[in-house]
Image 1 (tube, rainbow, N blue to C red):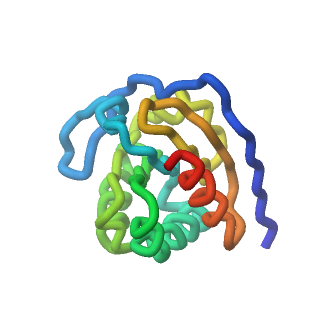
Image 2 (image 1 turned 90 degrees about the vertical axis):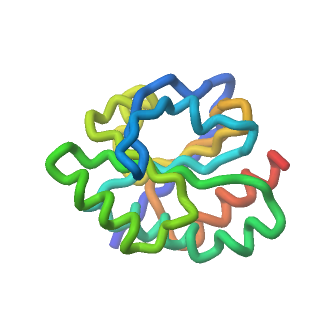
Length: 153
């Protein structure tokens, strides 16, 4: 299995204002998740095994990380309207109860954030500034995400 991991430090980019659906099916703005709390935003799809591996790895460490850092995880499904119900079921089935799950069925947020491949993960500070980004997943790379979150504490 070939894994790709590309990281860069973003500068002066802010979260765009895009309408998405939340887990309850309500339309919200992406800026609604910006509340002063740093966050990990992960773009994923139901057919992307590395995406699911990364989100499960984050979920496995989440309680330990939350003991020492204040942040949240936003999982953004890029599944389209045909597979959105599968994505909603998967977020529940995987036990991602502590994630804020959003659904980008028209892929507007994906385009606005210049995401071409999943998984693509961002670290966003509490004011909505994108401070880090990487695409791809290799086991253990979730620790780098946590390290970046710690820099924002």
